[in-house]
Amino acid sequence: MEKKPSYNDLLIKIDQLEIENKNLKQNEERLESLLALSKMTKISEREIREFALESVVSLTKSKAGYLHFVNEDQKTIELVSWSKGALKLCTAEKTSHYPIDQAGIWADSVRLRKPVVHNDYQNMHEKMGYPEGHFQVIRHLSAPIFDSDKIVAVAGVGNKETPYDDFDLRQTLLFMNSMWTILKQRRSADEIKRLRGILPLCSFCKKIRDDKGYWESVDIYISKYSEADISHGICPECLKEHYPEQYKKIFMKEKRQYERLNISLPVRLETMTSGRKEVFDLKTRDISTAGTFITTPFSFPDGTSFILDFKIPDEDIKGIKDIESLKGHTGRMVRATPQGMAIHFDKECPIESLKAL
Image (cartoon, rainbow, N blue to C red; front, side, top):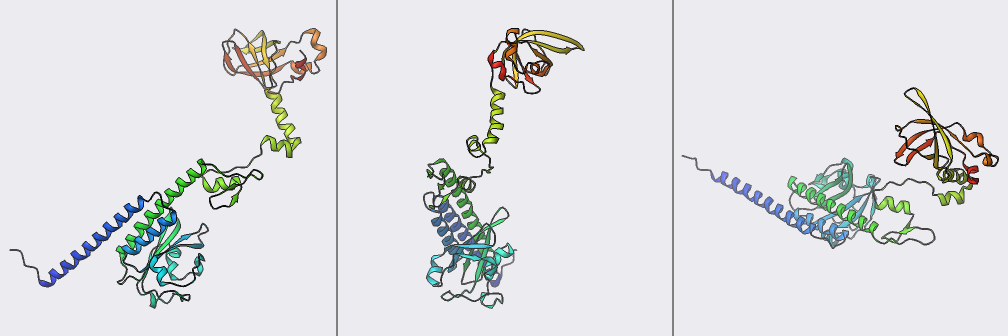
């Protein structure tokens, strides 16, 4: 026969059930709040932060709460939200930016990179004094919010009537991490929308105005609002304006290289096939400083090397200043078509004087 539990055992069991029911109710409240938060698609980031903070204050049965963002330098923090309860209790002057190394033990969660709980705040030897008008802190819980390995925010609550426990800590971490995920998604969506929309661009200096009214150079704007990396170069127009000599060297050479002359010019090709020299008398279809296209019924393997001698008609030789450089030119086949083959020269071919033909 099963032993009847004692009265004390029953009391312990009842207490355990009450704690479990309390935790279950708080979990349900957190899930309902998170669901409501996830549906807030048309409110501002400030309203999202305030809703999240008020929810954590309520879930932990606290009297006050705060939310700071940690700046990129990881050395300063920015106050972004006080809970309604804190605003009623505290009349001290609010400082928006604060160096972490000058903050009291409430910022230990940032310095230690882990949550901290002070259930006997008044007897903490490391605490600092309050600024004038600040409410008295009795109990305090603070938790850092991470994005990868970087702390991006710190959330805290205070003055719960009973000591803070692991359950309060879990509730705070779960809710505030969810808030940060929603904020990141919102910011990413806003950045995509911003980059896809109409950007206000100055007609003179070409700076872009951001959503806060500040004017920034294009490279800084793109770096700030996209994941693109910026590399600096110089366009042909600016090179021509600011460095005309370099422009001539670079772009005139390029122009000569890709300028093609549609000239049907006799050419003798010499190549080695199976260790035997072969010679072909053919004609060009066009020619540039970089190469030539030769009409031919013959086929050759890709990469075949040639020695080319261009044949200038006797009556035109006097007009060719650099006739010798058109002889013994070397190149290799890079492309074959049914009409012929393209040959790339090993060095530039002087074609300027060929324009007279």
